[in-house]
Length: 137
View (cartoon, rainbow, N blue to C red):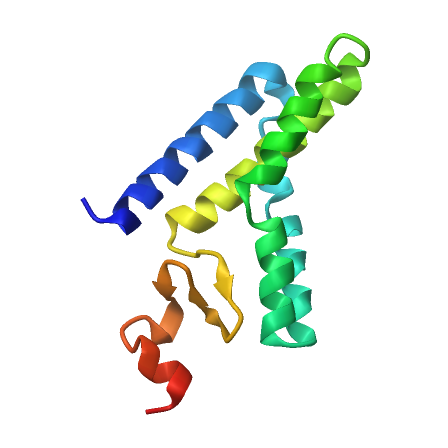
């Protein structure tokens, strides 16, 4: 199996896990990951400055590390502050859903030369052109 296929399957499972977790801890807030979905894409505002800055901002937000950190904090605060813990967990799950869906659809971490150049390859119209797009040949 190709690494790209494995990454898509793994991230699909993360989406299922995060949505299930949301429903288990807060059934009435099942909609929260969907409502928060686009908030994480505000990180593309870095592209206003330059592709390199945009890639740094985008990559800083589009990692599973932050949802994992928030999940741990939610667990640690679960006894002392159950309401805070619940909302931290909901944000963690929403974040995991966003990153998981992006990766499942083939949107990877950005390389500094172009928004459409990711660690998973080229996306969009440039998908089949590969390296030729960046060099202009």
